[in-house]
Image (cartoon, rainbow, N blue to C red; front, side, top):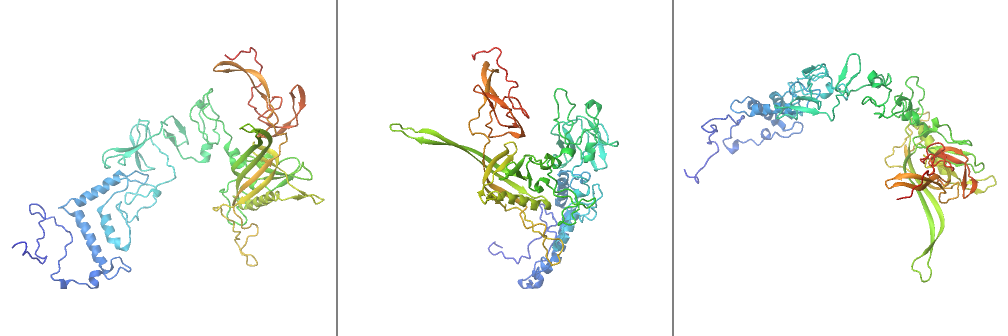
Length: 609
């Protein structure tokens, strides 16, 4: 029969013997008879499965699930094809190549794979059930928190993890492989100091079968041995998770020539200290002088009784009030004619306060202390020069006309506990009121002068505020003043606070200083001294004493009276602050003035070559 005349009803095609030489592969695994006539096709509900309203695939899902399970089962046990065997071997090699964790069983880092898991998953796909691919038990029901790796199911890291940092431990010495029962791992003690840990398989191996994965040290830390308890030692691996009490009670050895007990701080003994060159810087006792205690910063996360957020956090011992988290933020304004309060109450990392001068008694001030997160500060100096152009001259001639100074400052404030919120806004309200006038007993309007202290830049610097702005950040949470009980009138409001932002930004703070000296170039005195340079000994006049014109104060308070001979006459200056400039006569006051002490005159003057 020619190709043109070839006709078939698709039922006369040969089936089987699909391999070279007449062999039969036995595939496909699921065989279905071809209908004889088109009329035999059933287009009713039985062929379409109707709908998958509740069951994906409709009424045909049961038959299809049976076919899938049968097809996969035949593939895995098929002796004529190696596809099933190769697939199983591939999954085991991938598990072996995986990264080892504390939960990994022996040999297979990601658990054992069995074909039964894949076959079982095909049987429950239609029901939306997801089984574990790895493990003898794909359901995971045997994966209990036993503290040791489970070979029956998929490894679960959380079941064997005791802490976030698990120390690398060893139960003996030497180069032998040791079984660590606490982690269920085989560790290899290598004499190579670069190796921290290694195991079989993993990403460092070839297909999980050839080679091992090795984790190297960044540096050789096998420098000694530290005793932690009477029952265990961390040898070589000198990194461990210890509690605060363990750190505080670590003893030092006699050879280290240190105190009998290492102080409870975050410093660590690196090497035996050298008398000529210290290895570790000194530090304050951390538990006694940490930042929370040193500057009254407080800890919003400190453990306490939080049964009622209305009354604030309570002491868990006696249920007394723990007070505000930030003591400086909650410190109210106060009036004083003798200066600020003691340091242990107002101390801060950088001093920041504003004193409002009493118009009736200038010796008296009302102080406002802020826990300010300074966003920026600008100290601007400007001079005025007027130009005059004469006939016949192309350039202008200038005449000095004056001096001005302006300071811009911005900072952020945040309430970290309920007890700070209202005092914070009470102080901000008083600060805003200083822009408004003050009236004398006779009814005359007066402006308000202040003194500004910002670290050592300004110290009780008098001046006046030109303007100020309060900005509420978009991301600041607000206090909603919700009570935890219903009041007698049915109110839910907490009257002890108001609906206010927890965070506020102060900007546009424009301050004009009023100097306590005549603004002019600083009048310094100089003395001859010989200093060595690369060109030889040079005789120059270096500064001996700084004058009183101290725009940047570099001061923290205190005063003294000094005299300085200026232009051949004795002049007495007013009291000056202790600072890093020194006294007017060149001596030091309250700290190092970074000048040669004393600035000696040249003994054998030499000319500059």
